[in-house]
Length: 299
Ligand code: HEC
Image (cartoon, rainbow, N blue to C red; front, side):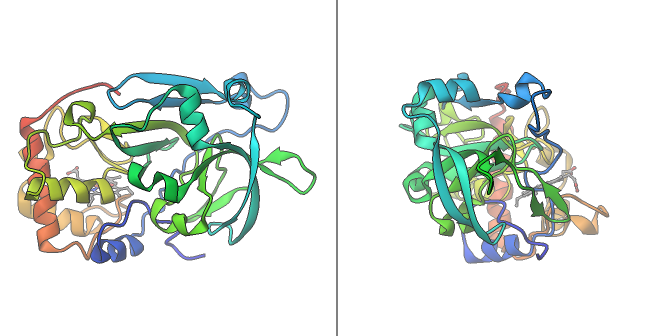
């Protein structure tokens, strides 16, 4: 298996798609999540909790037992060709639409769903592509003996268990742009309205450079970085309390984003060599704009 294991973000343009394809970071929902093996395992592992955050910030927690009790018909089965394993796998779980409905999460007014993984990585799914992805919340893999368990998947150099929750798509093609997040612990609906999304560049014209920069940021950077604490936590928060452009100059930022390893050996950030000058300008315009929009909503 190559070094590129799965896309880490939505692919917005062909240059970005290529940039991501060359990304070398091996971090993708990695980290050590415990697995259920036997009866001795603690309650939080046997009965893991999924936290669902609504656009606007309110959170609801749903345990596995609660899912079983509230979702009509209980868990169902999905067999899908999983590109990460290169073969068909049968999962037990729930259609994510049913889980969201059970938790009272409406997608009206949401722009994206952010899937938070145990290691701080955050995959995004644009709500307008929800139906196309048909996400399925897997709670385990059905083995040949019919028992439920997890088979580790190779991500970079590591073999990781997808537990506690693995979000796969009904159509294997969705893997290419959605990336099927593993070790999911929380799902956050990110509002389309600025008031509901703290990383949104509130007040910026919708067709301007800042908005374009935000779109690029959501597609390539939000998976690992938060702005106003919204987004992943693999890399540093970039706006609060001090905005990154307040303490790093533009040439440094441009060079760093293109090739982090030229600054730091073993950088965990992938290079973005094919991000065009205009793309970088737009991302930096977005980040600079956010200086005036610091909101420390604790999520
Ligand atoms: C796979 C995760 C990942 C992605 C994707 C990612 N980063 Fe990073 N980034 C990191 C990590 C981790 C660091 C911390 C330093 C390091 O490991 O080099 C970092 C550091 C940075 C820094 C330097 C902060 C400092 O200390 O000066 C900037 C700026 C930055 N990232 C911007 C971006 C931008 C812009 C994008 C999108 C084009 C992006 N990152 C995509 C993980 C990521």
